[in-house]
Structures are given as C-alpha cells and as structure tokens.
Amino acid sequence: MHIRRLASTVLLAASATLLVAGVPTMHLRLVKVEPAAASTVTVAPEEIRLFFSQEPEVRATKITIVDDSRNEIAVAAAKADAQDGKIVIVPITGVLVSGTYTVSWRTMAKDGHAVNGTFNFALRASHYQPADPAGVERVSVRFPR
Image 1: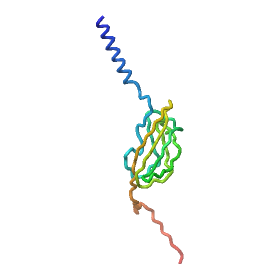
Image 2: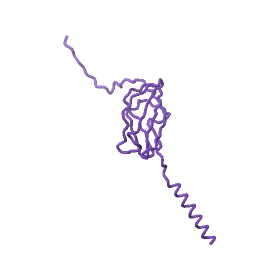
Image 3: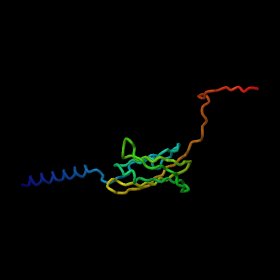
Image 4: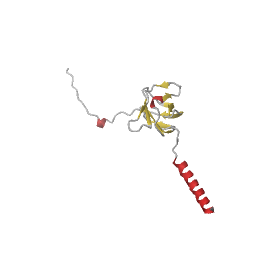
C-alpha cells in the first residue's frame, strides 16, 4: 500500500510539472521591436515593426512616435505582416531627422486583453557622402556658339 501511494504521489508531481511547463503564456506580450529598443540607427526607418507572442487585433493596434520636442510624427494605419500575423507593421509617413524618438504602442489580444508600452530609439543620420565619380557615367554636351 505504501509503495502504491508513493508511486501515485510521484506520478501526480511529474504530471503537474509537465502540465505547468507545457502551458503557453496566455497573455499577449511584445517580444521584439524594429528598430530595436534603445538602439541608434543611421538611416531613418520607413516603418516600425512590433513582434508579439501571439496574433494581436491589428485594427486595435495604434502607435504614436514623438521626437525630443514632443512633436508627433505621422504614421499610417497598422497592418499585419503577410507571412506572420504576430508581426504588426506601421509605416512612418512623416519625416525623421537626427534625434531621439519615443514610440508608444497599444494593442489588444484576441481575448480582449489590452497591452501597451513604450520604447525609444535614436537616429544619428550619417553625413552626406557624394557619389564616387568613378562610378558615374560622364556625358559631354556641346552648345553651339
């Protein structure tokens, strides 16, 4: 009887461990962003990409981007990535110049659970470099006198 109870206890503990370890995270969470949080980029991004742990309600996804002076940068409506519905893409339609930007985002899971957050990135645009003249086709034009 003692061995049977011990075996039942061990089996129950093992089952509970497997059950807890096998349960996926139930809530939507942000996994990654592009540009990366706290990063410095040298070329202005054309879009913000939000990578989630599960597919969000894209129609409920909104972001705002503000610069150092709290001026809002224009963005288009959010859309799901064509290959992966867990990725939300928000095209940037406004102009970004060198500076630090704060991105605030909010969305909702399919179960109605709302999530939001913020992250920053900096743009340090590299200086203009003229094209290498060796790669430029030369054209001669003669004007009549």
